[in-house]
Image: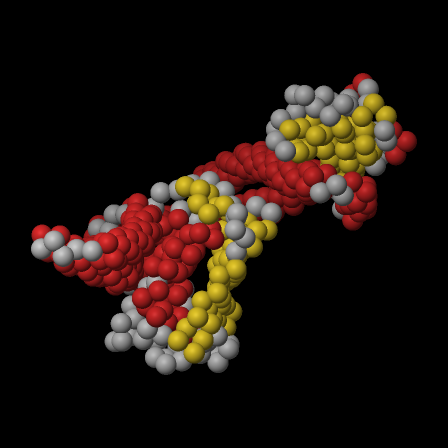
Length: 556
């Protein structure tokens, strides 16, 4: 009688334990499932809220960019007096962009110039909610509106004309797509929650079926090594490359193989990281060294370029000095000869006076010769004075580079005259066509440098020693600018050199006195110092033509 009772008791106890374990696991799984579903629902709702918020912000950002671009475009059209094209542009934008609900263009006085939603409101002063004052509208703003029962965001921005508010541009962007997206997101969340509940119940059932059989047998053999390996991976991800040293797992199963593979990976990555750090340090050092060397070389190159450019300018001034010295030599020589002749005449008349042999005819002859000598000396001294004055003005202008008002025609004549020693050595003729009274408020020294470099460039590169030719300089006034055209009929410029003539150190006479800086200096003077533009046209065998446009009144 006792044995069956014990067996029944054993069976009842086992059943109770099994039922208790199943109920405990079921309760835990159900609780976890409910918590997971609730948390996931909260996460889905937060994600939806953030996504819709981001979507709304994107709509606002894009709308503000569009309304500002359109306002700028409308301001330019108003400035260009293209008012008739504005309604066409606005209606086309509304018709092509389905999300643009309406566009209102409002004048500074509060009158609606264009109202796509209510065309009958055109040229009517807006009142009530539609009225927005242009006085306080200085930046782009937004507001939420409901027009005709339709929710929209209105973007408001000023239309500027000459730094003043000409009017207000208002663009309404429909929120139908955003509201539709909100409803679709809510429906999608509800559907995902239903699927999650179904999956959770299915997983819970499977877990109940399988968990009781594996929880007692695999916890120590599988869970503990995995926990240790996971912790090591987390530390390794945080930058601890020695995390693999703490793994102690000698089993031959998959977990053991995974642990050993991870440990080997940690060792190799540690070595690679050390090599990368060493290479990075050496690379940084090399980069710093190379950067210093390149910086030093660049500074030396810039210094050399500046010295070459300055030398080119001084060479031009030296040529001017040599030419003036040559020109002065002739009138001074004539003056010295005339004075010497007058001295001889005076000595002769003094001797005749002492000998008392002087006659009236001798005295009249003496006075006539002395008068001629004096006139000759005065004429040559005046000539010398003009040369010195021209040289003084041009040389001072080239050295000081001061801005002043000067007569272009007279200054061109002075420059050409200062270059006459060079021109006399050739068969080249010069022609200057310029209004007599045309004045230029700019830098005469820079202007002289440009003309001098043009002429010297033609003499060196455009003609051979005994060539005949003509250099033409034409100056005209065009509203607020002066157009100077320099042209010669020399050999011209090769097509492959034409695009590079203003680059530094580009020359076809290297080794024959050419530095390649003449036209580069001209380009920098015209574009930077004088605030103008320069263009070159040339064909081989047909000469070269430079067109220089500079402002009449340069604002330095």
